[in-house]
Image (cartoon, rainbow over all chains, first blue to last red; front, side):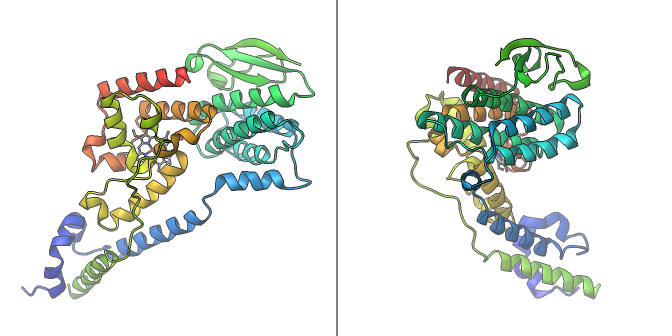
Length: 205
Length: 150
């Protein structure tokens, strides 16, 4: 049997890395290297646009595109309804648009303290909305809980034109709240599984 | 059979060559004042566990035993570190507002509870990063306490 020179030279390395695949008659071994190259390429590209905060800041600066708190609430309620309806795909879409709307919140008319609070709230909320845009429904609901707290805190500063109802279900994750435009309880954390868990805790406005 | 040998040969040569492409190592000697362990009084056992199991992907300093330096493992890790640090960087913990800290702690609890973190692909090699049932309970209790105290 004739051994190939390079096989001998790098037998050690091959053993370490790919003892399993390298012995499989060499079939389909080749793609492994190019694939890794691709992976590396991708990670390099990603590094370039890895600045979520700047994006948020820039969006907030956009003149004429500034969103009001009402626009955020509208998106939030749509998202809530999707979770009530157990609709994972729709909630993903709505999470993404909520993240965009949040980034456009115009905070210029508020005091310095309010501005820094709002920035903090928005930064947190954007992250949760983004996670909602890429998660399964159980994760979406986990993130929705914290998102609801953020949005509630936002409304405490910005106010709103409409009457909102803060509702509370003691069963989900040690007790969880959310906002609704209606007194009727429709639970976004359980959906059809336990649609009516909860009660109105507080009226806002 | 000849073609198989040639393909295997090309593949092996490629494997050797990729070893020479430089990796951007995630390494840093100093522990900043914003580090999680500096800011909070963390019991020693928990501190160790978090550093072994999480810091490789969630801090500015990854431990690089030999197998983490070999390609394509190093690229794979580099990718995870970049993504992991964007989500959570224990070294920069104190630069977060208390709202963000609470949010991250909640997320840490969920990730450990559900067994999603540390990543399976990682514990496959790093056996000591795995959590036993007792360790899981201990760390979740502690993190929950910390979260409620913020």
